[in-house]
Image (cartoon, rainbow, N blue to C red; front, side):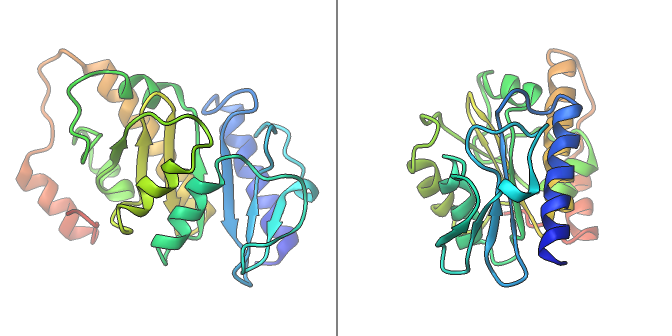
Length: 214
């Protein structure tokens, strides 16, 4: 995809997320690989609702910024996913309400944050790793993702928000939306007697859709 089209696509997806209340104000950040191995990244302090394609932070394949505004302070999150997952073509980080709310509750399995409520969270996300709280912008968040050695496409930052990598912008956006929707379901059903997917059913989904599940 040409650079101009990729810039417009990134801003279009960001505005869609903003317009639907999946991240508000000037929160969240998004990035995508360019055809030459570089990166386009949302600038710091900007709103998903008003991103300008011409202002995106542009990095070359060596990680040197060549144009655009100053990038998001959460670059360590993005860099860590690109460095550890060769299939990562885009990364999205939101401050989505339901996923953050669900991260505040106790008794989570840190290796598998989301309960197995539907097939789609398993298909699109695999297991989501719950990471502890870090001060926003702390490079230690990137180190924590690198410590997963590429074994997760998504992490949930406690008291902060989800970070999801996908093969392209569309995949990453759809996956982070699924994370938010599953968190919403989990909150709605909390305390109720529910029929979660069984181990056998999870295995069937993992096998049918070749999901990374370890």
